[in-house]
Length: 230
Image (cartoon, rainbow, N blue to C red; front, side, top):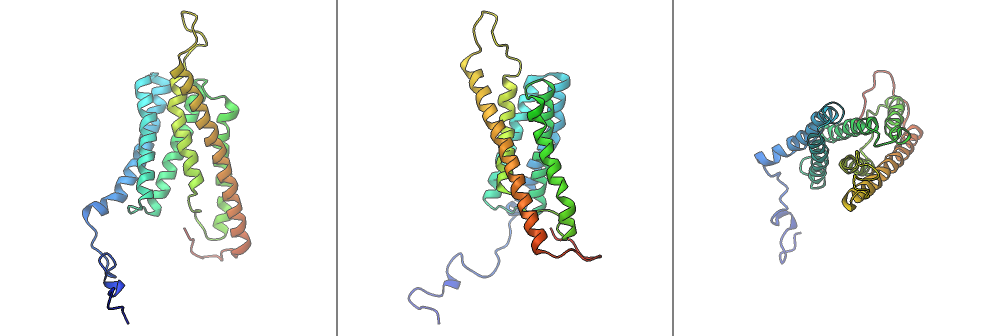
């Protein structure tokens, strides 16, 4: 019987069992997250054009900066649980992957990132793709997105504008002076973000591999004609 002094908690304000109607703003929040991810997809070829063909520093830095800002906003929407759905989550991961691969390639082409480090990014993606047959054999399409992978992607996105800022700075300036402190800081923080991002990317790959191994050990193979699970 409900406590008469404090009232039935089911009838307290904000605890009604009836679902509240969704307003237009709530319905638009998942769309906003998808638009932010689509912006990163659209700006990936723009960034490649600006860095490799037009050699326009302003457009290139704007594309790098937009990628960081949209990823931050997308993460904020997800953290606030504003209607994030599985499709939006996967689109966010796809957008980050495409932009990171494109930016890594572009910075390797202009000799900012050496090829052994640049190669680690696509190799990690190949490692993920190699797990797909094992997942499909158990009726699973994709694994849940790991927070570590999101943090790794943000670290790499944050490193690109910093590394690009110092991409064409000579060791000595015309007057025989060393590059200024802001350029040195940009280079140092850029490499710190980049190396941490690559380390976290590969760490998340190990965690995904462990999850696949557990799945293979605990889930029977999918029978022919069986439905896949997300």
